[in-house]
Image (cartoon, rainbow, N blue to C red; front, side, top):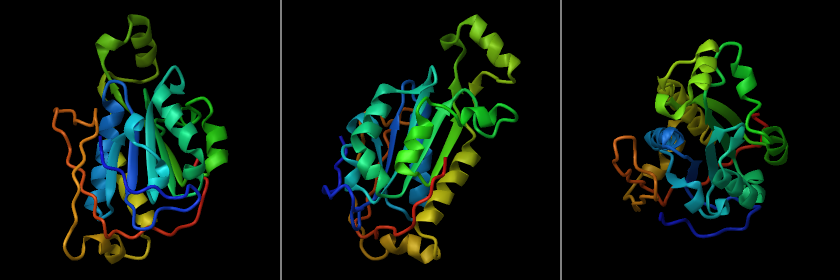
Length: 234
């Protein structure tokens, strides 16, 4: 279990705290997307903690949150719904980004706009917490997990089996988040990397990569809390 930052009032972002990248994943596809987002943020000098939603703790302990869940039967996973329910006041009071991982991404021609309407309840959630952005990414479609009828329908819509995660687009979104957190210039994003680094290592349960390697999550204790406005990105 990762070591969380000290708790803070839910209506005030934690000063100097890192960004939480939390995920709810069943077979690992969504976990991989969250790992790539966290890695991209750290590449841009933003301190990020990666955690399974079931073990992430209180969102109030972080300066900003990126949260995503796999979508099954047009719903987020139960642990994803529970994370959002338990942390709704904190998510509404700090910069928050949401994403889903499903059969198609929101950039898919024709069907993409429909994917942004999932999961059930996303419109109400967006009205409640006003996230800075919401994206839907295609996931890993494994043949043995889909019955024949579902595969035929999927192919008819233009889908293909295999790993459909658009890594360049996922990384681009991660860079956008980093720029939104520290919009002035690159030196602002790198401020937490100046001087001696106080590093903490975290390996949340279930956070292993697709190759079974446990990521090391470095938390730069000197990273400042971002100060940006709110916007509804859904």
